[in-house]
Image 1: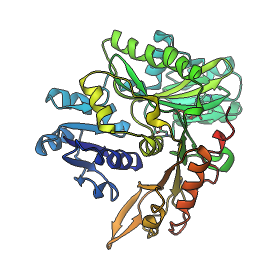
Image 2 (image 1 turned 45 degrees about the vertical axis):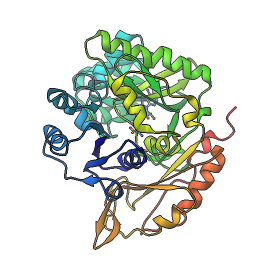
Image 3 (image 1 turned 180 degrees about the horizontal axis):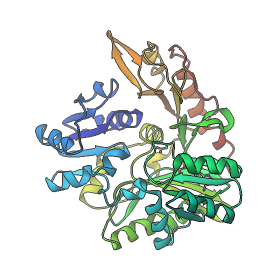
Image 4 (image 1 turned 120 degrees about the vertical axis):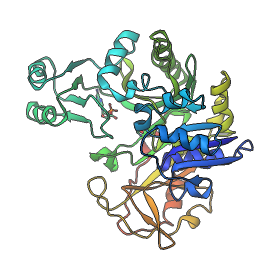
Length: 412
Ligand code: AMP
Ligand code: GLY
């Protein structure tokens, strides 16, 4: 089977690395890919629009395409592939509105009876200001459209709220602030059922102890113990399956990876957002710790349904992101990277993200540069393995969080 992976980050490197281990793979193309992906796939430049990916798939005789980022999904890549009877994993443009429009998503949660924060949708500055009176602070202000992780502000008072409304508006969701622990719950759907993956937790803030500005994600870990089995069942029954069933009933069935960003509140799990793709860096830990042939899981989706045995994700896994100096504001690029081979000696895997080849050596080319990923029999050992591995890596200005996975220690 020949596959095409769309994207260029650590998430796509993790997918490419895992899928390359499948005995059923006969070839792999990535567009645009990155230097890590280039070790297992042929990289071709990104086309000008999403129909260009279908051209690439046809030109290379690709059997199945997997899409990493949200932008091509929201732009309708899946519809283009379906028009040409090409196989692809991901939602149609209509179904991708679950991520592409916060207003659509909130209205959908209402129609499907999915628990979420109390909210109000507004389409003008005046309307937003008018609604401020009906919320307490902190108040969450969300831009309607895709904002690359910069579309949410938690306003502590009226002044901050007014600034956020100006910056993010006019189409906004104003939302009650929820308290609890965040969990990323990702599954794969064929339109009518959903295979849940291991629960994961992201670390969005730049600095240790969840301080500093929000980022694309400074690390993640997966561990079955993030959720009790009762909590997992609740999430499936109240959130994931109602979403799949309702999307189908509305004539826009959801296929592909559905990622619920959840808050585990004292009143049960509530949805903060749906993403219509895999998470980054959640995918790095999910791929590293998955025992089995991930292509077979994708194949199940294309050809029917089945259940992933729970032990597929029995070992905890940790990914620590190594970021460039100046990230997230203005990352410094062009710094030479060394030590990756030494870091991988003990079983860890270094997934490449913002990197490029420069004069024959690897250099930084973005904010999140590498994702050092390791598994272990316990979460503690996975953490130790990841941090031991990253000590081997050097580049000028490299920084990372020291507490990835700590929240998960001492659970139950
Ligand atoms: P989102 O893009 O909706 O996931 O929001 C980004 C981040 O903002 C989330 O990961 C949460 O940390 C935070 N957030 C979003 N909505 C809420 C909410 N209603 N209450 C508390 N925190 C939130
Ligand atoms: N890790 C957060 C995301 O992928 O959206």
